Length: 186
Image (cartoon, rainbow, N blue to C red):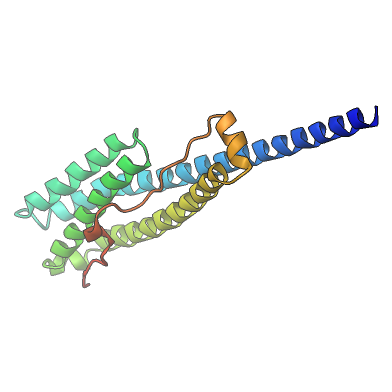
């Protein structure tokens, strides 16, 4: 009789422990979703700034049409990639960042543009958004790391496998060229 109570107690404790692990997995998954939402918000802010930036620059850089078209094209690709996963989105956003750096580098050749208050405001706002994207990306990648660790570690891997938890992709730069610090002088 005493053995059955001990076994029942062990089963109850194991059940409570499994529930605790499951709740932690749910919390961590929600933090990953929150992190992805933060990235998405900042990327949309940047995407909304780009048409204003292109229009401001267009008046000064009429013969730099290729640079402007590239930025517009990369913005469209990034918008289409927003329906994809972290890997697809990070690749598209990396290409957009590269196009924006090229645009800013070309703008260096136009002193009137560099002195334009609207351009300067857009440039400053874009810089702020880029900083926010970095912060959101770090938060997201941290929560992905925590979730992926829980999915791999014992005994939480048993609970994660039972409830079909899958690892998430990091939001990272794929291209080594994009990892290099851009050389833009103002």
